[in-house]
Image 1 (cartoon, rainbow, N blue to C red):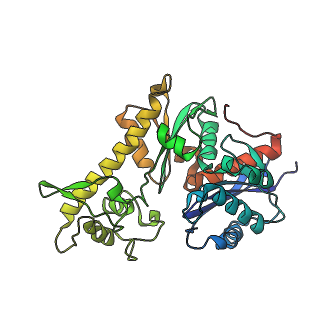
Image 2 (image 1 turned 120 degrees about the horizontal axis):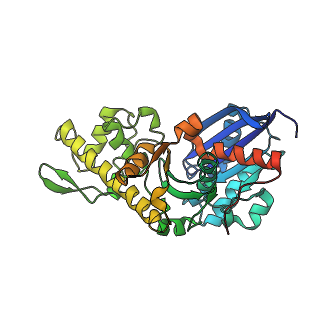
Amino acid sequence: MPDDVAVAGWDIGGVHIKGARAVVRGGALRERRITVRPFEVWRAPDDLPEMLRAVADQLGVRDGDPMAVTMTAELSDVFRTKRDGVTHVIESVRRAFPRTGPQALSVRGELVPLEEALVRPLDFAATNWVAAALYAGRFVRDCLLVDVGSTTTDIIAVRDGRLVCEGRTDMARLASGELVYTGVVRSNPNTLAEMVPLRGRWCRVAGEHFTLMADVYLALTRLPESAYTCPTPDGRAKTREAALERLARLVCADREQLDEEELLKIACYLAERQLQLVTDGLVQVLSRLEYGYGLPVVTAGAGAFVAATAAQRLRLTVIDGRTLWGRAGVALPAAAATELIAARLTKGATWSMPS
């Protein structure tokens, strides 16, 4: 193939669209661009093609550029079934890029035309973790990728650059510990704890959408305001003071009733609960791997700091993913998808998972 061919990768989620573009030149990817655009698909599913075109324009992606697609948006409850969700995403991509002929990534690491994906849509549900782990395996051939994102956590073993996973569907991955449904932005703290410590007692929490883990980590200064990539529960500012106000609502209080020190103690406890949840998943995955404790942990995602702490507690070697792929980590599956499609174009092959 000629040099200077632009390729694109997509990670189409339920609340974000992540896109990446690169140019194949001299056998390597150059001129990388990435972006993350908030888009809650359940609010306006029919707007997805327009949003994809807008993100493509921002990246400089043209209809006709080779591209690979991963997704998780199919789980959104705007769709009655995951089959319906995958079909909607695929059809939206086809409408957005009618000249391109994009390819979709399957749970086995295959890249196939969208028309084929429509025949067996469930093989293409929730595939962004496949791209991310295969990408990590290109840098560290034997490792555990622990990707703590805004909503979920993926824990994936890689041996000799290939994925060694027990589950491929969301349900199977939840059961295996490879998918932990908790993240550092969108998770509601009341999913982590029924009670929190308050003034020497255990106080039950409200079962309402008052606050998010983004507020916890903003209060603790572990996340920057820019990482708060979803709407706030109260529609107010994404500042530390506003985060403390939302956190007070968790125990049906406000800032006139609870001071900063009391709220930070609650935040520390909630962060510890989330850390334990991720650690439990990591231990579960390690328990089935021969010599698993000898594998280094490659951290990724907005909550990479959670992954690093969990690994350190287990005395595992930690490799900061940012040292491997740089800024591409903010849209890791999309960046990985560009590598996949580039490999297909240059070598006529793609990465695959063991059967």
